Structures are given as C-alpha cells and as structure tokens.
Image 1 (cartoon, rainbow, N blue to C red):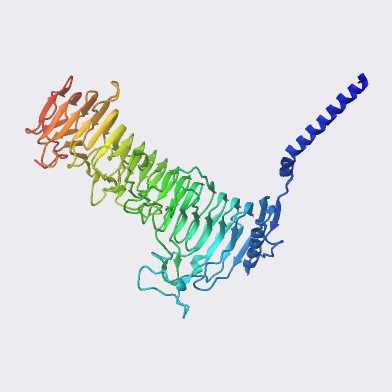
Image 2 (image 1 turned 180 degrees about the vertical axis):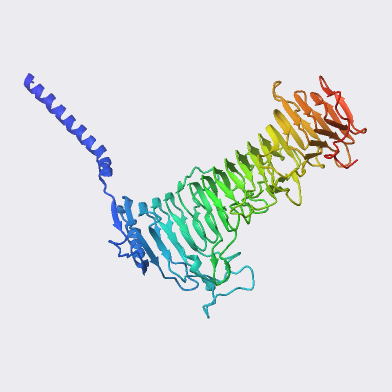
Length: 639
C-alpha cells in the first residue's frame, strides 16, 4: 500500500469516527433539547371554555368543559407537558346540584393530571362563588324539606344532600392552584338535618386532595364551605417509616369561616403550610336555623389519620384563631392502636381558643416551637417513649382576651392523668386572670413526670383567678426556672401551687445544672411526696441554686401519712431570703449534702418529728436573726 493510500485510509477512518461521535451526541442531547423546547399549553376559562365571570351567569358549564378537556388530555402523551388554565378576574357563579342520595357535583374535578397550573389573577378579584340556596344535610326524599332524624347516628343515603367540592385533585402530580377565592356561600345555603355521626358529615369543601403528589396551593381564600376549606386524604405511604413524600405545600392561604375545619389532614406524608389562616370555623350563622353551621370537631386544623398515616407535617407562621371547636386537634382513639402520626411540628404560630381549647393533642410525635398559645391546651400524648412525647419549645402560654372575650379555660395547660413525659423547654406562662397549669401525669415515675427546662411563670394578675390553684403533680425541673411578678400585676392576692404527688416518692425533682427561684410575693408552694434537689449531678461542676424570695413559702409535707425525703444534693445551694419561709413538716426526712442557708429575717420551721441528717460536706446555716417559726401569713395549717 502506497503512502497516499494509507493517508486516505486514515482520513476515512477518522471521518467515520467523527460521524459516529456526532450521531451519539445528537442522540444524547435530542431529548434534552426537546424538553427545553416544549411549549406550555395555555387555556383561558373565558376565551376557550365560555365562562362569563359577571357574578350573575352560571359558569358551571365552562368549568365542566375545562374539566373534560384536561382530564381527556391527561390520557394522551401530551398530558405530560406543562399546561396552564388561566382564570381571569371576575366572579364565577356556579349553580347546580345533583339529586338527593347522589354524589356531590364538583366544580373542577381533575383526575390523573400532571404539570398543570390553575392560575387566577388574585384572590381579591378572582372568585368562584356558589349560588344562593344550595342544599346541605338531611332532607326528606318525599317532601324535599329539611329532615332531623330522631337518632344521633344517621346515615341513610337517600336523605343526603351533598354539595361536592370546588376543586378536586385525584391522582394528580405537580399541580399548582394560585390566585383564587373559592366562596362556598354557606351562609345562604339551605341547611337540612344532621347526617353522619355528628353534625353534617357530607362533602361541601373548597379543595379536596386525594392520592396526589407535589401539589402547591398558593394565595387562595377558601371560605364559607359547609365542611372543610381543604381536605387532604393521601394514603400512599405503606408504613409509618415509608420514605414516600407527598410534598403538599400550602402558602399564604385564608381558610376561614368553614363548617367543620379550615384544614383536615386525614392522610399525608409531607405537608407544609406557611403563612396560612385556619380560623373562625363553625362561626357562620344560618339565619333560618338561628345558629351557626358547625360539625365536630369544628377545628382550625384537624390531624386525624384515616386508615393511613399523617406524618412529616409542619405548620409555620399560621393563625388558628376563634374556632368553635379546638384551634388544633390531633386526637388518638381510645384503646391500644398502632402509631399513625410522626414528626408533626407547629412552629411560630398563633393558637387562640376562645370558646374551646387552643389545642387538643393525644397523638404521638407532636411538637410546638415558638408558638403563642392563648387559651387552654388540653391533654398531651400518653407516650410510650420520650420521642413520642408532646413537646413545647420556646412557647408562650397566656390567657389573653380576644376582642374583649376571655380566652378559654381556667388553666393555660390542662392535663389530668392523660399524658406521659410532656416536655416544656424555655417556655413562658403569663397569668392575668386564669391559672397557669393543672398537670398530673398518667404514671407516677420520674420518666412520666412533666419535664420543665428553663421555664418562667409570670404572675401578671389584675384580679385573682377563681375556683382552684395551680398543680404540677409530678415534675422534673432543670435549667433556670423562675416564678416572678409581671409588669402589670396589681392584684395582691395569695397564689397557691401544689408540687408533687403524695402517692409517689420524690415526685418533685430539681436536676443539675439549673436554678429554681420563687420570687413572686404572696405565693405559697406545697410540695407533696418529697423534694429531690441536685441528686447525682452528671458532672462535679453542675450545681443547683434554689432561692425562696421574700413573702414566698415553700412547704415540704409528708407523703400519705408516712415519711417523705427532702434531699439537698452535694452541689446544691438552697437559700431562704429575708421574709421568705421554708417549712419542713412532720415525718419528713431531711438529708443535706450541700448547703441550706436561712438568712436573717427569714423563716424556718422544722417539725419536731422530722429528722435532719448532714451528709459529706453538707451544712445547715441558720443566720443569727433567722426566725425559727412559720411565716405569719403564708403558712401551712396542717399541724
């Protein structure tokens, strides 16, 4: 072969290689180029489907045409491409209802749709409004008049008038709904009798999400629906630890003045609500009834798993205010049931109970972070492990009035034998007319007690609360805990608190490191079942400082007629200040391994039947002018 032939052969070989490389590159980049060049299908509710939007014309047919178009499109390859349904400014009246016993008629029912945006101009100028006179509840099939069944549980389908939902997303993915108001107009509905187990448990919702992922609802107003503003019922997670993520996002929503809930979450794995209001549920008065349309639980938000799980839920900067039921419900059915909730966080939110509890929680794995809780919280989870326990971090509990109406409940936190291992970290209780706390754990062991770390109790009363006293009947204190006056206190009434439980030894515990300061004047603290301060600190430098301030009395009482122990640990310093008082009543065993100091002008009473033992370097230091007697006004009357 000549040199020229060899060069031509090499050139041809290189050319073929280049062609192969070029073909490979085109094959690899073709789909990407196709993806970036895909155009978004845009449809207009008025131009393409015949809506009018004048607030007078019935536009239901236009929504039905849009529904049919997008549902049919979803069945074709084109259905995977992005699309937008634009809803221009206007009021879109919808009016039609299926006969009694039929399913509700949804305005926009989307099934198997992907990559779709339903886009209104904004919620102030773009409204889907139900017409006056929709029927909801139980009606007599013969007379068509409202029917009130004699039995409480009534589920005869032939009597059921169901409205349906404004928007249904079923088996959809990557769908956004933005810039709309959905007005159920429940105040002008014709309401029949009860149907279901309580109230009216029939469909009449703003948005219903079922079996759908990557759903975003943004800038919506969903109000005056007979049942829920939004209901999320996803059951795609097979187990509680399933990594399935639904990715439901709610942003800048107003879900107010609905009949059952602002938001019902009956199944989800991954939901975040940000800057949303779920308020005024059950507050719409029906003139013909002379009462509000309300179905239990009537909450702002209800987290209630139904044959599935509710997990990885976060509410951030939300308002749950003035609901006829609880602001928040996460209720676990009575009895032994498998765990169905996990990682529920309510953060930076306002929960305000006016005529009902601010929150009712018995489900596990619920945490409140930096929340304002006005009105009484009730229960807490009967946790099997510390991880399941109800937890509060950086929260403020306050009985603040709402528009002149007192917040609900005689206590700000009320848990009477229902909960175990409730944790409060860096929380504040501010009392102005109600008591701080009524807390009794479900079991009498230190793991089950209420655990308070770095909490403040602020007496800010302008009048004495009535009818009871504060109770922490099984508590572990750690961090810096203080009882003190607030800046607005004008009432000089005596404040009483019971600590511990006479049926359990060492049911008031103070752990190192930390401090416990009793500084609110005219306050009386009765310790039952013994007081254990600074026992076995984890590190030698971990200490406890306890201060009984002026006009404060701490009484350590016997336990159920038998002796209790008052233990002062080796790194503990307990100081009774001038005007303060420490009483140790009969048969209490006192062990001082640290320092107990009674200053001049302070009161110290030791019952003759009580015995003091000094351990190690323990010291009992009575100043020369310490008063060996009970406080003249803040004193026990047992003996």
